[in-house]
Amino acid sequence: MNRRNLLKASLALAAYTGLPATGLFAARALAATADGEIEHFDFDALQANAKDLASKPFADTNQILPPTLANMTPQQFNAIQYDPQHSLWGDIKGQLDVQFFHVGMGFKQPVRMYSVDPKTKESREVHFRPQLFNYESSGVDKSQLKGDLGFAGFKLFKAPEIATHDILSFLGASYFRSVDSTGQYGLSARGLAIDTYAKRREEFPNFTKFWFETPTKDNTRFVVYALLDSPSATGAYRFDIDCQADQVVMAVDAHINARVDIEQLGVAAMTSMFSCGTDERRMCDTIHPQIHDSDRLAMWRGNGEWICRPLNNPATLQFNAFADNNPKGFGLVQTDHDFASYQDTVDWYNQRPSLWVEPTTEWGEGSIDLLEIPTTGETLDNIVAFWTPKTPVTAGMSLNFGYKLYWSALPPVGTPLARVHATRSGMGGFLEGWAPGEHYPEVWARRFAVDFIGGGLDRLPPGTAIEPVVTVSAGEVKDFNVLIIPDIKGYRVTFDWYPKTDSTEPVEIRLFIRTQDRTLSETWLYQYFPPAADKRHYP
Image (cartoon, rainbow, N blue to C red; front, side, top):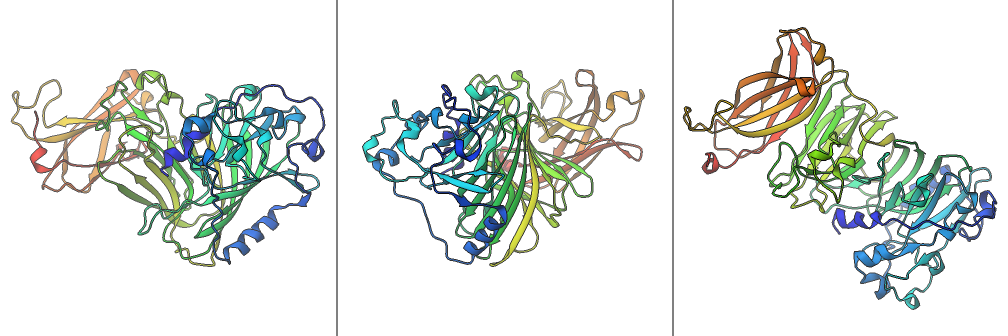
């Protein structure tokens, strides 16, 4: 199952009406939904359980679904609606409530759900039963629904939107995502990524159990625990989720145990889509100027340096590792929220949130890894980013990672220096305003324009000399221009890249601006893919 198919069912929005009015609280009020026997639960026990599980052979718990569920279309799957009369916290009539996703289609893993009283540490399981769902327009044959099939995942609602749409969704493998103030889903996060770019097939661990601490009536913050299981690893996770007015912030405490040697462990993994943007036009033959959930990988390195790495939709799969020591943060960012940049009235890319990772424990040495996969369009996610520890992960090893996830329009932190506003590229080798071959011999080159804004650029004294500092891994750069752009209160740096060989290997370009000895901007990193030698000419 590809990443996008794994996620698209989570876009289904449940109708939410007619809450019961019993007014009861805590575990007693949940008995109608959480109908299991009372069991003790605490996070220490979950960690011990996950560690013990890692010492045993992996047992695949995917189930064989009845034909009416296994053969359904995405439209049929989305038509199954959870009955809000059985929402987990409906009787509390508070700020938050939880509903569950039905199994079906590719979602075959039965996920077990438990309600926890945070005072007594008593939990009750929520057992699957057809009475929890509405099947009217789904075409599901309910006579085939035998036994406890479990759930596929869950979704969270928050007042005042509690009657219209969910704001957080965990669905499929260890995928989850949330929204900002726009209420628009975008990129996804994962509990763990394993061998995303390795010698063997990528592995997608599953969250197999969730425990929900019951919030108070007025609380917009709650805690969810999860058990992760896969052939290579197990994990115990604690998510402290703060549903704020303009963003959702998750504090994650992840305890990971390796069953076997793992070639590539991806921590705080995130998955997004980049089809085309201001600089990458290869797949933009549509009515939309840009198509992407995220436009860049942003990194705040352990040494304090800020990095902007524009995303690509490459012709061939590309993997880059950015070495670091105790990074301060990184994320896939959607910086442009102007409707005019996308002209999209279906997916609303101008409303997509960014996702920022802030480590809260010492992560040590490792790398922020970026995988870019060729994609033909917006329904196929093709961008993956995560942290990989430098120390090899071997069987029996246990690791702990603490971090916060910020789902917001822009990251909660930013560089005090000037930042990259936009990247553009096109034909080079001639003076702007003219054309190749007109007064200029045809010499093939590629032109880049990088716009910088903020950081006090608009307050520099007139006549300040701004120097672009550029390094390249191959070829040469020349024909520099630095232009003041009043409309953005910033500067544009343009330069041309000229090849020295016929190589089509990716070229790494690095740029920042300074004045005298003072650095003015974050660092722009770019990966350019030169065309074959016989394509280096103008029409």
